[in-house]
Image 1: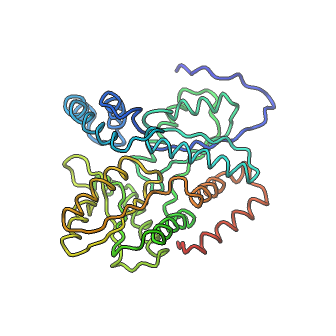
Image 2: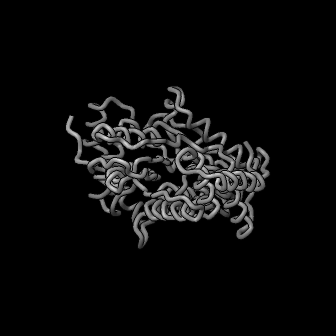
Image 3: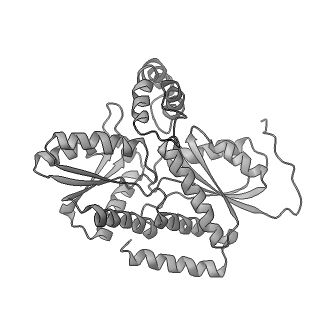
Length: 362
């Protein structure tokens, strides 16, 4: 096996630690050619589409990549900003804020972000960190709930990079934090702040990204972890079972996906006389196409067209200070033997106490 060129080993080199914060990815531009390249990589991942490769290759390249790029490009164009893709802008900002937060606590940790599909890629960022002398890397997916379609795919990219690397850094992985009280507290605070500014609707809809129902039957914990996140968030907000609904969005293809589906649920609620809804997407840590276009635009239009009167979308965690603090704490929990001192252990205990004070439960 041919290994990639690496920096020469230096005896006695002081170990450096880094965090690689990984999100799904985004096209480089809201154009059909950029979407074609992005979708080919994304939908070509066997973790994402579990159909025999020869058959799926024919469908993907013979049909989907001929039709979908132009339609998807128009959707991306409706949310594109001066900074580019919202997902990339927020992910980069989160990584910068995480690095600053850790530095303020006295930790010398390099923080970088990477995209599973698109740029900057996971292999490229790992190689760059290695060139900087990093010997310990914590992989932090931006996905609170574990799924083979997302979290495991990030790990796949890391493992494949390792196959071509002679001296592999010490690696640790954060699998999930769907029920971490600090994550739940950050979610609850964003909702409370929104309600304080805009008022509270009759119903809160928690919309998670969907996956094929078959993944649940095959042992994927994603559905259960989404349900627990929803329950804990409702408890933190003091909501009764009839004050919120948990749904799944972004269905693709004709197979049965996790139910209930978000948009049909909103339409049914409007038909049943619900006039005002708030919608939050707890599984997305950054606003993106699925939240800004699919929910804030398409789902809102469907609800209002069906008779609803008021639709409010509550933004993702994005760069909220409470979320950055939670992300810092979660990262430090996984780096304890690397660079956690006694004062920081005390600050972690204080942080957990603050999270519980915000109403988070497990």
